[in-house]
Image (cartoon, rainbow over all chains, first blue to last red; front, side, top):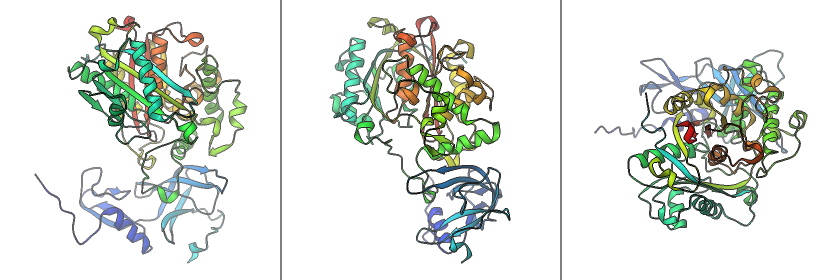
Length: 136
Length: 383
């Protein structure tokens, strides 16, 4: 049999992704050999490649699907965004109730106890982002 | 390819318990009552059962819990849990085990008390770490996202979704066992509280109690039981993702793969199908599965269901019990697809009985449009 021992020097992909986020960096994986991007972070690409390196996400993408969860305590949208690198992620479009599918969006990292990647419409006429952290 | 499993096994006992509301009973107690009902239906005793297939929303090791509760010592058991599609997969697994001679009488069962226990959909589904920062509501957010994409790509309208709910209610109104009965209009569905755009409360399945169980044996002794055998004709599963983030195309489910494989195994073509039972957790499900299973082209599902085409008296008999939307939905609904298939094929469906009910398609869905299992049941005439 073959044993693949995790490196003692580095964490697994999930923890690494979250550590980058805590540093304010939006990083995704890419296979050196095939060039394919991977998200969410994994130990192996869909092709089977394990030569995954971390690269800075361009941060631009397009809204693929969106819904607004209506709750008594307040509503918020949940969206799927296709990054320009060709991978999809769940996120929220910040500062707006909702946007049209197909809207071009740009990522920013919302800081705090649990940092996360959110997106804002790229359209100049889009509403201003309410969250002050956007301009930190 | 001719399948060696077609017609080799049959359901000889079917039971339900606590459909709707069953205050004061636990999930396992309801399950136990449905097993007793299935045994009575088959004229069998517990000691005849030597295989158990079970999955529930509340037991991590379902077959283990069922075995203990019923006092069984099965030779074969399986707790495959792929959400609401588990039981259609159990039909396939039970048929494989029976045909291999590993067992002689297979019990498939489910029970839930989630309406009276909490009134909320119960799930043991673990959070998906890459989705939780955005606080999706499980499972409706996923289905709402799929709906938004279908509307965007194909012009499907909220009115079309509402027509799915109205058709289901039409059937429920012919079924005294259905939980939600009474008049329902398109406007009623559209004007209900928006839960997750574009889905209103009227686009969502019920949360009920309920349990169901069935017993399968090899076909060679299926006629030794009191009721007409309901034969297993074939089944196939397909699974491409777990969380909605990873679904390749939100308008195409893995039913587009499970369906063709199941049709081939069962040697059935679309014109042969008398009854179509689709897991309608949300109104978009019915539209997606009609397309993916080949009853209409991709993108045409919204137009297909318009104006009563799947309601009583319509062109295609879909979800004749009233479905998860209006009959029963105790968390994992897949057993109830089987129950209605059996009821129609045995001609026990009362006022909603179809004129011809020889071949039933059952399509189970699990997770967030994730696991898809298509199965066929048939009468003796279908063999």
